[in-house]
Length: 175
Length: 175
Image (cartoon, rainbow over all chains, first blue to last red; front, top):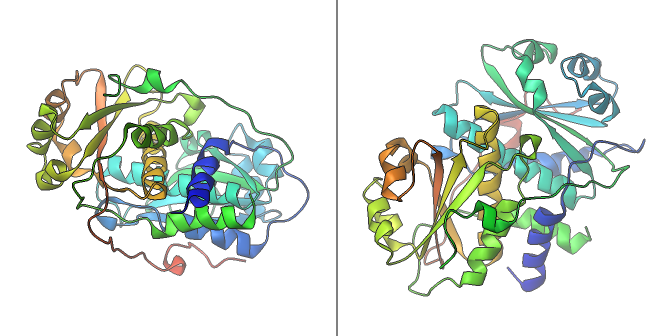
């Protein structure tokens, strides 16, 4: 990629933060499609693409049903769009690698959200409430395993969080 | 982000492919650092950042030791740089979510690789060979769980792969 394009990609990864407060402004259907397209292009083991998406817009009765399944219900209620990410057990091939693939897919969507000027938070606590949380969305828990719920909207806050220095993550110094 | 920046981020996700053949040209230390920095900024549950990296350069005796642990040994032998991604069991909090986090971290690194004009492939089959594959890198399998090996170099092929249409991934049509 060209220098400016490279910088944009790296900047998206460095500057993206969890956003848990959203303005009243709606999110367009085209924006949601752009986010889902990003998830679609994630890599997966054997290219099995086990992820499935359920999009719930603000006001849909499932928004409240999902909110009741997590201690972060206030974030779910504020969101303009919820993207439920599931694995289809019929498409899985390896539990650990399919979970990793879901993570790659979610990260693509979070980066697309940021690139679009939207904000999102990856809600993970909610999946502790399987199978009820899968049923709350009207899905069959025997077939769909919930990976995460992404709450999305237009940012009404600045995000903040930090990371360990790279030296703490390296198992030996770079040669 | 500005329109051109947004396009660059989305393009990186859509155009990145697995690259399994590399030229003889080396990869600079600064490029490796840029890739690792991208991984460092991935999101994780409770921000626990459980990932750890081991970088093995071409010619290091561990390159051959790792190659012997996978049926994709020819790719490992060709790579100019190998990035082993591990979870530190002392930093984990939830097996499933830590695996997802590793996937997000790996995806950031793959996107950075692409943005830099490098090529990489996410090798997953190699982790089937735990604990031997962890020992082959000189690490303690009681502490470090292997998530993936990334083989990196300058692309000597065009990648190709496709994805299911978005409609096949949607659990109900977009409203």
